[in-house]
Length: 214
Image 1 (cartoon, rainbow, N blue to C red):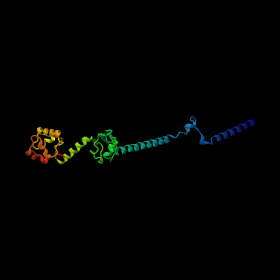
Image 2 (cartoon, one colour):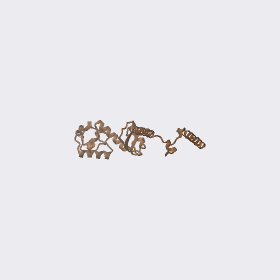
Image 3 (spheres, one colour):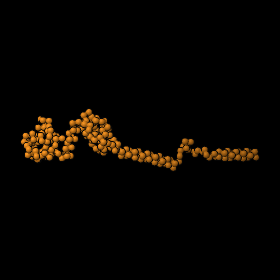
Image 4 (cartoon, one colour):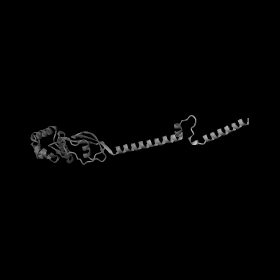
């Protein structure tokens, strides 16, 4: 009887010793119902912090991208280039560009371009239309602008409406002036207008200070 009681006490002490040794390593303990992988998952608070950090980084990248796009829009302009150029159309060039830059973006002059008609050193602005005339158009346009600036009517290039602004010149006389210059290659001097039927010295005196043949 004593022997059995002794054996029971020894078993109890051994069981307690084994139990104490198993509880000593708390660092590697895994709760019942979870795996090693789930034990490594960050706590909910840590996950929220990580998501917030990621969203902040994405927002910062989007803002930087938006600023870059805005800066690009602010530093470029769009200009409509047409007429005697290689590739007419809307071109995009840097802000602060000149006409020559817009021309280059449109492929350069066309074969029939009047190359001296447009001031290539002039500045251009956003939304501007640049027309490059052909060679024949260039001469006429340049001359018309010069005559308009001087306030004189060029009897070699003026149309009927412009000729009718001269004192004593009506539609019929304007047609006569145009017919004469077409038949004779133009007027060499202002006085030659008196060679037109119906225009004599008295009529010439009224208009001589208002006409030119340049």
